[in-house]
Length: 326
Ligand SMILES: Nc1nc2c(ncn2[C@@H]2O[C@H](COP(=O)(O)OP(=O)(O)O)[C@@H](O)[C@H]2O)c(=O)[nH]1
Ligand SMILES: [Mg+2]
Image (cartoon, rainbow, N blue to C red; front, side, top):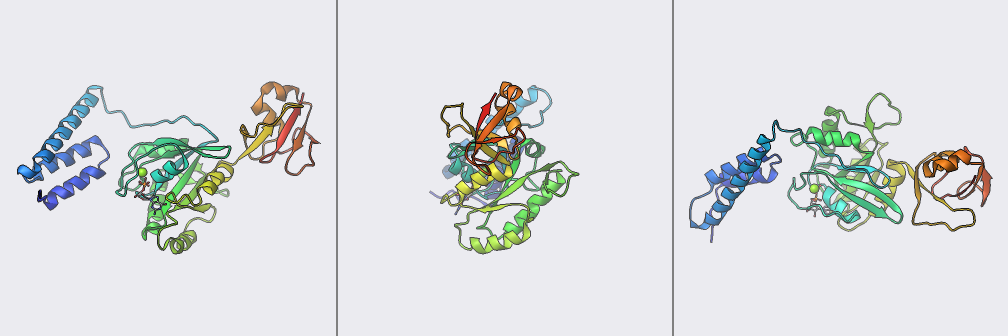
């Protein structure tokens, strides 16, 4: 049965799909109702639109009763080695990336603006854990203050771009412009005058036709201090590298293991520390009492011979095993 939907109706329907606020959705639904051809074939649809309208009106009324509209604000408690926000244009594969590296199940779809709210998931690789937060797309039209507030709270940003899209260079330029307008800058080791965030880039959809050529062009325009990791959320290529690089480079972490004198090392339970942490600082992070009474330590790992006695200011490396003596 053909419903003979008009272009006006289809345009309103598209607006509804892309609407983010309840007000925008309501306006689009009302337009859909007024433009839908009124005949037998569309009765079901008409009824459905009416139901959606009345539900939204109710929602808006009860929100209004609760006083002046509260500014949207989200706070997601940090877990794992650090919190990394997935930032990018619509459809670059942010949600699919999160699905592929964690147990979180954000909606993935080929139309834009599927994601409306931040959604966390834990990316795991071996004993590494990084908290990722899926976000709505960031564009001139959709940017909202809460998105930049979340960027400021995060430990790092993962810029996700679509190497399958011919517009990727323009999308990159737009994203940088919108972030700049909202006072979020990407950290440059040389510049110190701004509130800045560290960022890395996932060059996603590397499986798509022509992606490798676009990747070359993309590398030419992206700031050269931003690490680019080619990957595919679809095939899984590059994802373990991505999680590792986020841990070591973006968050700047290392894993250190301790062993009670005479005991065994538990490799599943690393202590996650900042790069550059000394033996004394590590002791303080692990247990205040140990640091207070620390006499010396032995280290197995990088730059030492096995079990070497080291001073308290010895800098630890990823994978080091430390035995503290108090
Ligand atoms: N070929 C390919 N398609 C992908 C990849 N990642 C995501 N997609 C597709 O791109 C579309 C948008 O994905 P989604 O995760 O919803 O994008 P988001 O808007 O950035 O969250 C969906 O149709 C996905 O199936 C990828 O690595 N390769
Ligand atoms: Mg999404």
